[in-house]
Image (cartoon, rainbow over all chains, first blue to last red; front, top):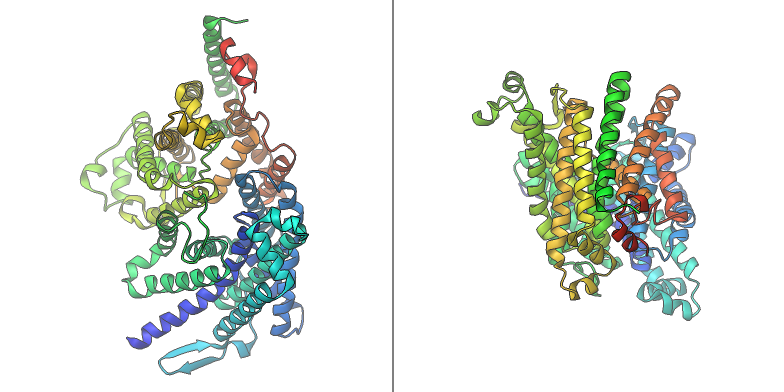
Length: 297
Length: 336
C-alpha cells in the first residue's frame, strides 16, 4: 500500500509539473494586463503538434526540440498578442475575455480543419520509454524528463524575473502599469515578453503532454488549460510562485482523488477540480500566495 | 406619433404577422427548412434570455447551456414514452417511469428545474464579478456535464437519451419566442430592468440608490435560466436525442457571439444576431461537408467576432432598441 501511495504521489508530481508550466503563463499575463487568457491552453495543443511534426520530420534530438518548441510557442503567443489583444487594450475586462475565448475556438477549429479531429499517436524515442524501478515505484525516463525539465525551466524563470532588468520591468508593470510607463519602461515590449515566455512554457508543456499520454488531438488543450487556470487561482492569480505551488497542489489533489477514493468516484475527477475552483474563489479569492486584495467578489 | 394604444396594436400586428409567417412556412417549406427555422427560433430564445444576465445586468455567465441541459433532460424524461422508458432506463424510480407528459407541461417543469438550479448555483457564485464569474459558471457547466454523465439511472450516462418523440414544431417554438421576447421586453422597461442596467453601469452608484444587488442579480440569472431550460426542452424534442455533450462550450461560445454581435442589452439586436448566426452556420454546413473542411464555420464565426470586438465593440445595436418599437415616452430614455 505504501508503494501504491508513493506511486500516486509521483504521478501527482508529474501532472503538477505540467500544470505548473501552463499556469505560469496564465498568471504572468493576468498579473500584467488583468486578462484571463482562455487561448493559453490551446498553445499546449500547438506545442504538442509542433513536437510531433519535428519528431517525424527528422533526426532532431529531444533537447533541441524542447528549445525549438519553446521558441515556436513564444512566437505563437507574440502573434496572438499582437493581432488580437493589443487592439483591445483598454477595453473592459470582459471584452478581453471574450476575445480570448474566440481565439481559443479559432485555434481549436483551425486544428480540426488542418489536422482533422482524429487523435494521432505521439512518437517518443525509445530511450525515453525505458522503465526504471526505484524501490516500490516505477517510472519511465520521460516522466523523469518532464519533472526535471519543468523544474529547470522554472528556475530559469525565477532567476529571470528576480535578477534581470527585463524581470524588474515585468514586476514593475505588474505592480502598476501606468507608473511603470512613466518610469520609461516599454510597456508593449514587456507585455509581449510576458506572452512570449508564458506561451513558450505552455508549448513545452504540450510536448510533455503528448509524451506522457501518447495521443494528441486538436482539442486536447482546453481542459488542461482550464485546470491550469484553477491552479493559478489556488496559488493566487498574478503570483508566479503561487502558480507553481497551486499547480503541484492541484496535481497531487487530482491524482489522490482518483487514486484513494473508490473507483466509482474517479469519473468525478473534473467535477472535483472545478468545485475546488468555485470554493477557492468564494472562500479565498486571493489564493494562497496572492498578496493584493482585488475586485473579485 | 403613436399613442399607447397604437403602440399596443403595433405589437399585436407584429405577433400576428409572425404567426402568418409560421403558417406560410409550414405549408410551403419542407421539413429540413422548417427544422432550420426552428433552430433559429430556439437560438432567439437563448440569446434574448442570455442577454438578461450578460447584457442587461453585466453578469458575464458562460453557464447558459448548463441550464439548457437541466431543462432538456427533465423535459425529455417526462415526455419519454413509458414503454421505451422501461427499456432504456430500467433503473428509474417507479413513479417517474410511469409518467408520460405532453410537451407544454414538460417544458414548463424543465424551465422551473433550470430556475431552481440557477438559484442553487447563483447564491454562492453571483458574488463573483467579471471574468471570475465567467470562469465559475463555465466550471458549473463542466461539473453538470460530469454529473449527468454519472447519473446513469436517470440519464443513461454518456449514451444519452435517443428516440425522443419529435414534439417540437414551429408553433411551439414561435409561442416561446413570443413569450421570451415579451417578458424580456417588459422586464427591460420595468423598474427591475432599470435596476439591472444600473448595476451594469455602476454597481456602487446603483447600491447607493437603493437597488438590491444580490436580489436583482439572482432575478436576472434565474429568469434567464428558466427560458434556457425551456429552450433546452424544445431543442431535445427537435433533435430527438440528448447527450451530456450536447450542451458544450462551443454552444456557450455561439450564444455569447450572438449577444456580443447583437449588442449587450438590446433585445432586437440579440434576436437579429441569433437569426443571422443560425443562418450563417446553416449556409456553411454544406461547405463543411462537401469540402470536408470541418471546423470552418467556427473559424469564420470566431474571426467575425474578433472583427466586431475590434471595430464595433458595442455590437450592432448597443443597448438600444430601434426607436419605432418604443413607446413615445420611452424614446427619450433610449437616446443616451
